[in-house]
Image (cartoon, rainbow, N blue to C red; front, side, top):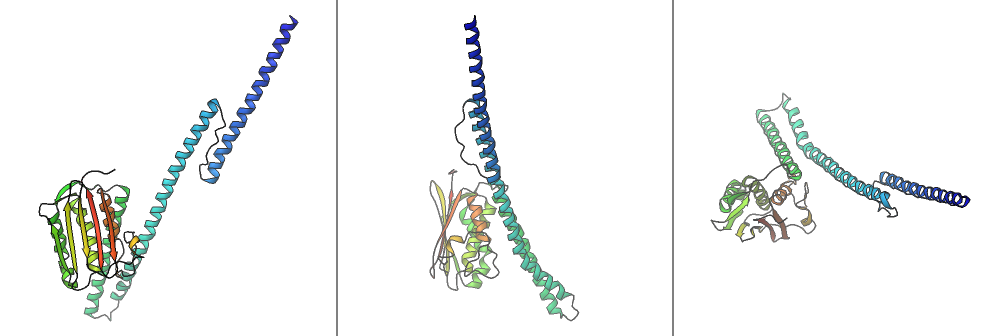
Length: 306
C-alpha cells in the first residue's frame, strides 16, 4: 500500500513538473510572439519569423506572420496611393499657377480706364487663351487619373486605320502648313485597328503633333501601319531635330520637359498617349538620333498578352 502511495505521489510530482515546464515553454513562445508583433509595429516592416514554436502555438505563429505580411502590403499600397495623389495635387497646383497668375494680371489691366479698345481686346483674348489652357489641362489630368485608377473603360472596336490617320492629318493640316512639314502615310486601305477610336485618336494625335513641333521647314512625318496575325504595328517617324540622349528615357514621364521643349508645353501629351496605349493591350517605344529625327513604335496586340 505504501509503495502504491509513493508511486502515485511521484507520478503527481512528475505531472506537475511537466505542466510547469510546458507552461513556461508556452509562456516563452507567447512572449516571443508579443515581441514579434511589437517589432512589426515599431519598425513598420515584417521581419522573418523564427520557427521555434510547436503544436497550436506554431499554427498561431504562422497565422500572425501571414496577417502581418498582408497588413504590411496593404499599408504599402495605401502609402503609395497617398504619395501618388500628393504628387498629382502638387503637379496640378504647379501647372495651374502660371495661367491663373496671367488671368489675374489681365483682369487687373481690364479695370484700368486708360486702356485702348485694342489693348482691351488683346487682354480678353489672352484671358480666353489661358482659360482654354486650364480647361485642357484639367481634362487631360482627369483622364490620366482615370486611366491610372482603371476607371476609364476603353472600348475594343474595329477601326479603319487609314481613315483614323486621315482625320488626324486633317486636324493638324494648318500647323503642318505653317511649319512647312509634309504629312505622309503608308497604310493599306483595309488595315484595321482593334482599339477605342476616340482615345486612340487622342494618343496618336499627341505623338504626331509632338513630331510636328520638333520638325523644321521642309521636313517630313511618315505614318506606317502594318497588320500581322499577332498585332497591328504603327511607326511614326520624323526628320526633325531628334531627342537628346539625356531626355530620351524620360519623354513619356508626366510633366517632363526636355531641353528643346516649347516654353508653352506642359509635358503631359506623351504621358497621356502612353497611358492610353498601355491600357489597350499595347506597347510604345521611341528611338532617336540628334539632328536626324525620331521614330515612335506602337504595337496593338489583337489578344490579351497577360
